[in-house]
Length: 176
View 1: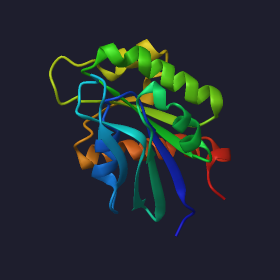
View 2: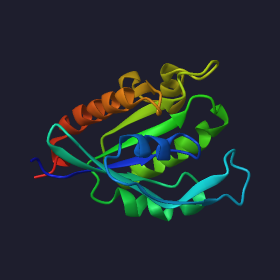
View 3: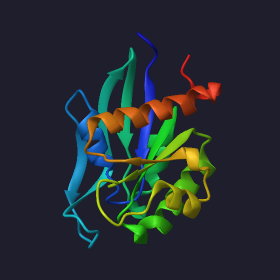
View 4: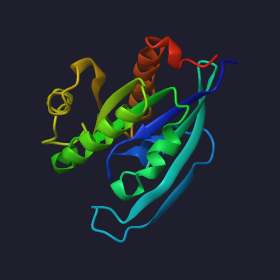
């Protein structure tokens, strides 16, 4: 068995973080979803974290999902501490959320050096932003921004392998 990998799943509200973790976790997911008191486009919101775990190729993985609302931003620091990599999700059908996505991504990457991949969710829908459009908006290299249907197990596993490649490219982030 390999050392434990801690991965953070972050992004704005409604990007698919909880869905991603629930789909991949091989254990019961711990979540802190509560009814939303604001109009955020969905009935519940994560206030502290989501947690799930799985094993891929002998690597035990802990997935920590961050809250998407800025008012819970203190949890971003807490959950990113000691993380080996980050899956950053953005909903392709919610372009109005891209400024907040940039704010969250800029904040986290200013606090910690962490390899990451951006997953643009809802690519199975019509009229969504493409990964290339999101890469341009976030001013990121296109190879770091990939399309993702967060309800498709195979696509979620594939994007985790892309994150593993990014982590392996940054040896200081690999666990000992």
